[in-house]
Amino acid sequence: MYKRQEITAAQLDAQRAYCDMIRAAIAPRPHFAMVETYGCQQNESDSEILRGWLMDCGYSLTDDASRADMIAINTCAVREHAEKRVFGNVGALVHNRAKNPDLIVAVGGCMTQQETVKERIRESFRMVDLVFGPHEVWQFPELLWRTMERRGRRGNRSRLIAASPSDGVVAEGLPRQRDSGVKAWLSIMNGCDNFCTYCIVPHVRGRERSRRPADVLAEAAALAAAGYRDITLLGQNVNSYGKGLDDGVDFPDLLRAVNAIDGDFVIRFMTSHPKDATEKLFRAMAESEKCARHLHLPAQSGSDRILKLMNRHYDRKKYLEAVALARRYMPDLVLTTDIIVGFPGETEADFAETLSLVEEVRYDAMFTFIYSPRTGTPAAAMPDPVSRAEKQVWFDRLLGTANAISAEKHAAYVGKTVRVLIDGETNDPARNLSARTKGGRLVHLAGDPSLVGTFADAKITASSTWALFGETARQ
Ligand code: 5AD
Ligand code: SF4
Image (tube, protein in one colour):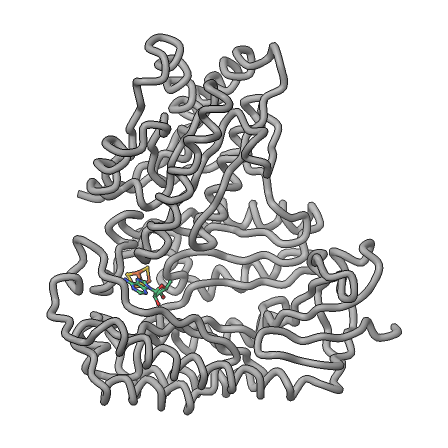
């Protein structure tokens, strides 16, 4: 049964004591740690905490696996493809282990919440020393210490497999090594209560639980004060933020409160569930000048029959009404979505409905997926007569349509000057800076690297399906 479990200051102090012990143990020579991340932004955010802990434990961070003394892999279970890649890459670490017998390999993230995965690691992945789940990120130092102790006592043979069943952990005050000095993830909640029939997330990340508004706002204010220019509020379904708390603050209220924080920054958020995307949300977005004019509103399908089988709690009409309302409040809204092709029982006629929805809404960008059965979800037990090859044909048609619309929408920017946040550097010497419009469109620019972290006016000179290209306009 779900129970909210707030981690206490004493529990965190105990973790810091483990950091001190690890720091002392590895002190004789420099140690390097690497964290590799698969999957969603929530995982990116958890990896930042892992990096924070590792630094507190005395490690230096590296991206070079051959140099690492400690490798943590933060996995994703949403689709089978990601799982296969993880197993392939973890398997390849056997070579790193051969070169460095002291290497510690830890596998964390959503995959490890599945018994089948734990079993497979136990049997076939001897190079893994520690398995831990998303609910144990807060106690990573203790798990790492216990792993080191076991290694010391019994050589390389004894592993620690900790991933606990889903529960309701909420932890404040964890260390965090952020990836960027410009863009920050701000996790406002964890877990999901929606149980879409195809989705593994509620099974691995547990029930929905929100951080307290005061904690979220304190973190947002600290980010703004530290000069972050782009803050993304994260949750599996941010629209139901606040459920289960007694603070009386819902997501639109939270958005307004973050908007009221002093500073020059953009607020983004994801993901929104269409069933909870209300007029109150759109009004709050429109009236919050810092809020990006961007809504990621996963439709998943355009067919009412399939939406029902997916347990999505809205139909095509309701979805289109939400889009129209959002656009009424924000005529310049950038709209993106997720679509699953080939859900069990989907027919050519259902697929045609999805295609027509996409043509009607005209998304700025789309994330399209072929349905991937996940053990333990209701959809995995539904009859699925359509072949993979046929689903691929549908997928290619959808992608063709989506790309053509994105390209057209991007082409409409050419010749215009838009305000962008320059958020990083690229590997392309001709256009060495990456930037985002307020709606979240990617822009490549040429300019001095010192511009990273500043807002600029960009004149758009060219476009593609994926991005805009331009030059910084004279101020
Ligand atoms: N198969 C394919 N796509 C999936 N998604 C979630 N679960 C599955 C699955 N089993 C997609 C949904 C979700 C996005 C993050 O991943 O479109 O919005
Ligand atoms: Fe999965 Fe649906 Fe929850 Fe999104 S809302 S995480 S698709 S169950």
